[in-house]
Image (cartoon, rainbow, N blue to C red):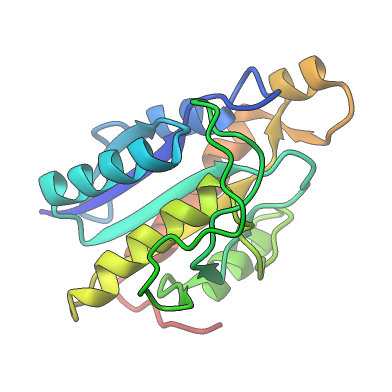
Amino acid sequence: MKKILLTGFEPFLHYTVNPTMKVVNQFKNRVINDYEIHAEILVVDFKQSAIQFKQLIEKVQPDIIISLGLAGGRFKITPERISINTKDGEPDNSGYTPIDEAIYPDGNDAYFTNLPIRQMVNQLLEKGYPAEISNSAGTYLCNNIMYEGLKYALSKNSNILSGFIHIPASHELAIQHGKIPSWSLDDLIESIRICIEVATAPNNRLLY
């Protein structure tokens, strides 16, 4: 059976809840279109999450890598188009604050996802879920993990698909935060299920 590595993150910064954890955990050991889903939660630590992520990839040997991240303030599901070779931003959970650092000093400037993100967005819109392609995964942990996944997938010169999807806050988080839009957890879960269905469809095509 083919395999998907699906990852989310623990809470970080001023977000005491990270809905990606609950979304990802809903897919533990599920099978979609004959793909077995391996669901894992990553730490919010630039160094440790990269190590953890690469260890999971080597262990699972996935055919598809889909990583999820919280974009507090966005109100749509946003598959990311590109990751850049940059670490910069607020402190991670260990207090590390990179400034204008390369993820890999000798690495590619950027990697484009090879997930069928256009079809994902089209299918989400057809089902009534607000969605659009995002052209910036930022420079925080989400971009870092997206870059690591694509570096692995594309260096293998194989049919491995890899990419990243940002999701809005859950109602639980929005109530605590007070100033960000939110979706119900059920809708977040269903939207990611739709994205997985598209990614695992036998006739998916890479249209950006």
